[in-house]
Image (cartoon, rainbow, N blue to C red):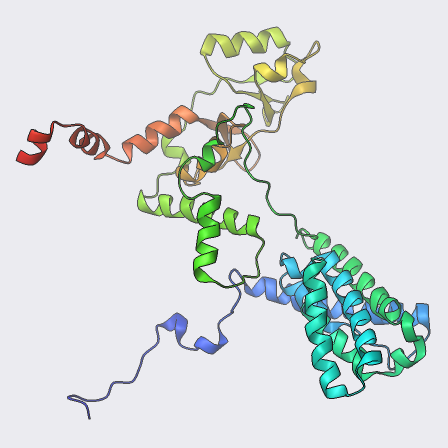
Length: 381
C-alpha cells in the first residue's frame, strides 16, 4: 500500500519514447539515412558483381550483416577492411573444418561459432558476422556444395572484398573517412623528453587503462578515439564553465601581414620588429594564403611563396576556449580569424588566449594567495 495516489512515471520530452532513441552516440538522422542508402547500394552492387563474375546463382550468399557495420559504424574497429575480409574468410575456414570433424550439426554450429571468435581474436580480425559465416559453413548451402574448400575465398572472400571496396568509394563520396584512422597521439614537437602540452594536465593514458579495468567491459571504440573523445569533452566542459567568450572578444584586430611576393628578409624583419612568431601571408586579393615563421623563412628562396605553411583559422563567433587544442599542440603559435571568404579579421596568439583564461578566472589570484599564506593567517581566516 502507498500513502498517497500513485503517480505515473513521466519521461522528459526527449525521453518520451526511450526505446526508440538511438543506441549509438552521435547517430544523427543524416548519418542513419546515409547508412541505409550505402547498404542498399553496396549490397545490390555486390550481388550484381558476384553474379557477373561467378555466373547467375540465386543461392549465392551475400554478407548483409557486414554491410550494417560498414555503413552504420564505419569507424568501429570491427568494421575495418581486415576485420571484414579476414574475419569472414577465417570464420568460413573454421566452419568448414569443424563440419568435417564434428558430425552432429547442433554441437558443430556452437563449436564453429566459438572457435571462429577465438581465431578472429588471435588474428585481430574480430567481426561479428563471422560467427554466422562459420555456422553457415557448418550447416551447408548450395554455394558451399558448389565451391567446396574454395568456399572461404569464393564467394565469401570475394563478396567481402567487393563490399569493402564499395564502402570505401561510398564513404569517400559522402565525405567520411574509411578506412578509419585513429587520431595520432600528441608528440613533443620540440624533440625533448617533456610530455607534449596537451597531456601534461588532465587525465593520462594510465587513467584510461585504469577506468577500463574498473568498468570491466569491452567497448566498440578504438582506444585512440576514446582518448580523443575524452579530451574534447574536457574542452567542451571548459567552454561551458567559463561562459560564451568568443574569438571576436579577445582577438587582436591590427594584424601584421605580408604579401606572398615579399622577400624572406622583409618577412623576417616584420617578425623581429613586432616580436611575433606567426606572420599571416595574403594573396593579391587580400585573402589569407597561410603563414610563415622563422623556421619557414630559413628555407625560403627569393620569395616566401614557396614556404608558406597552412594557417590555423577560426571564425569570429567561435568559442575562444575552443582554440585550446590548436594553441597547445606545440605547432601553432597563433590562430588567424577569418570570414567566409578568408579575409583576415583578427588574430589570437597564445598570449591572447592565456590572458583571456586568466580574466575568466577572477578568483584565481585569491585562491593562490590563500594557498601561500602563512599557517597562522589561514587559521585566522
